Each structure stands twice: as structure tokens, then as C-alpha cells.
Image (cartoon, rainbow, N blue to C red):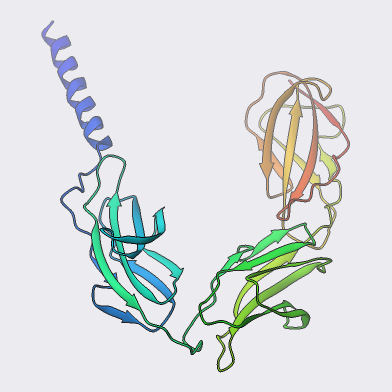
Length: 309
């Protein structure tokens, strides 16, 4: 009985240690150190990056931004939760107040609050256009795209350009709106960019990369096991894929316990092989399908058959 009691006591101590490891740190007493903008700052730029020091053991941050003050709100602009310690937003001239607090799953800090002023600045040279979508380095199979960016105060018009990756101009337009839809975009690696202008000044161009790929991959060709082969585990399934220009490809391997009716397993592979470590004895069917980064899917391969013994 004494031995059993000792074992139970050891197990209880181990369990308590495991629970302690799962308990999050209490950050309620921590403070968020704001770096920019701070109370009293007067900014000449409309593009403002809010920045603060990271808080140990915090997992997210909640940022709120109002025009006016939190006691006298003229416009509630931002209420966002993020994992990073920076946030960029374009503002118009006026008086603002912002606050940020750190959180984890169980506790949170108090808000750190700061006030600042954005001054009117007719010169756009110090401003930056923030692009909204498409996201940077997007791969898409859609040859019609809508491009959008955040408007900047004191802007008369925006210049939108679509270029090849080498800088060749494909499309350009001057417009007053903060978005444009372009159709029949050519295939390949591209760049889109936007500049804001008024009668006396312009911003620099802000650019993002975009790849248009609407060509589906070829159907994979099965290599092994050969149709009807018997194998023992472990073994490797292999196939070939035709070379097609465009975005990178990931293959899906489908294993069936009967002829394409009951799916036994589906796995993804960036290479043209898949290693099977263990598998019950029986007869299996398999096929492969490719899908590229832009969302194009190939036809299915032919159907293979093998027996595990």
C-alpha cells in the first residue's frame, strides 16, 4: 500500500507540473510602451504607422483609433486585433486619439492612449499610397482583376499602371476613383502600381507583384507501382507531371480501397512521389491530380491498381 501511495503522489506532482506548463502568464500588470505617434505629435504625412513595443507573453494587440477623443468621438475609424506591433492607416487632416492594449487568452493589459494631430499638407511628396488589393505576390487564374487602394487627401487624380516584370508598360490610366477593373490581362509575372497627384506634386509609385496563370497543368502520368503489381510495405508511389509554364504545382494522390468508390486516403505532395510506411493487406486503386498556385487543376491521371501483401 505504501508503494502504491508513493506512485500516486508522484503522478499527482507530475500532473500539477503539466497543468502549470499550460497556464498562461498573467499580463494584467504589464504596460504597452507606445513608440509612435505620441501625445503632442503633429504629423505632416497622412500615412501614419502606429507602432509600439511588444509585450512579453502577449499573443495579440487591440488597436482603436478615433477622430476627436474617446470621450468626444467624432468618427470611430479603427477597431482591430492583430498579432504584430505595427499598423498603418491613411488619415485626413484633423485631431485624433488612439489606444492599444496587449492580450493573451486569459488576461489583458490596460489601454495605452495617445493623442496627435495630422496637419493639412498640399504637397503629396511626403505621402505614400497604400495598396489594398490584390494582395502582394498574388497568383490568380482570373484575367480580369479589380485593383483598389486607399484614398489620400488633397489628391486630384491617381495614375494606375500595369507592367511586365521587366518593366514594360501594358496599361495605364489616370482616374479620380480609388479603384479600377482591368480585363484581358496577359499571362505571366506582372507588376501593378499607383501614384497620387495634384496640381503641384505627386507621390512616388507604390507597387505590388501579380502573377496571372490560367493554364491548367497537364494530367499526371503514373509510374509505379505498375498496374496489378504486388508490393510490401514500405513502398513508394511515383508519377510524372508534364512541364507547363506558370506557377508551382502541388499534386493530390487519391488511394481507394475499391475502384474509385471508397476513398482510403488522400495526401498532398510537392514532389512526384509519396512514401507509404504501412497499409493493410488488400487491393487498392490510385490516381493523381495536379493543382497550381493560381488554382488551376489538371485532369485526373489514369487509374492504377496494386495489391499489398
